[in-house]
Length: 370
Image 1: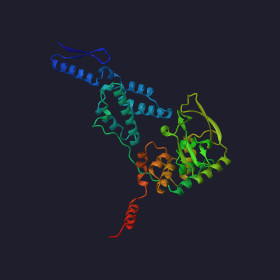
Image 2: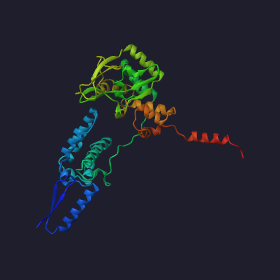
Image 3: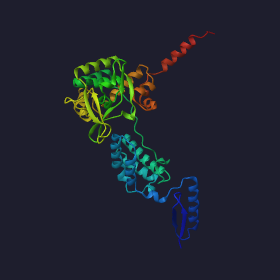
Image 4: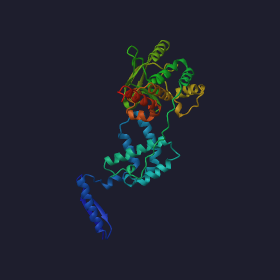
């Protein structure tokens, strides 16, 4: 004899669950629990969680809103590092122990920073499954699961002499790129996508509204990182270099797709920096043929930390050393969260101990003596 519990789901459809002989107590408890979950709004149809992770992940990738460059990298990470382990498992069968097992298997295979990003993808996918009422809880959020965290390395800014040496190692047409990175804090893609229309020489501003990105091996224009355009103060010294550059290398109006290589939307920009063949610059080609040799010629060993992004660290350290605020620096760098700026650069802020002593001494000196 078997017990079958019949009940009506929130969608109005009849459901049933079978229990073995002598399991009437379990059957009754299941019915009470089910009705309670329905009243609380936390009911999850057991059938909904039988979809495999691979199937659900592909649906998540298809329906999630990404810009094309982010979509490309996310698809690669999910298919390369998550689907092989979780792909054949049903969503409802994935437990915290499986998350810990996967994370342990990735140690040594993925860099800590990459592991943290892939884990974030996994947590987001399973979080969406909770929202879609396919599973009741996200196993990534269990107390026994410790999210991998990237190793925080302190930024060590280049000295001015090093920046100058790298600049001198570049072809003349590319040297002002260093001035924009070190003197205005622009990212590499933002420099490559900067047009003469984005420079206000009279008011002293650079308007950062686009970048050149590599999407599915093709160059496109797109919004800056975090989809935030911004204005950055243009120092007179950098403005002078840019004026001379425009005289020596006239801007070239180039048309590229916007965000998606397959898009019909095209944007034309009078680019400041182009190749010797008057085309848009591919960052990978530039890094390999121009930037890396210049770094080596300056006596610096090329690593992941010696890309053009290092110029932004030089810019940040220079502003902090001059007393600029974290809030202003975050705005100029295009960071969405000033807290991120603080975490990255707080060790570069001038020590405040002597300023504190002087401030109190000045205050006390101006008061009445006993």
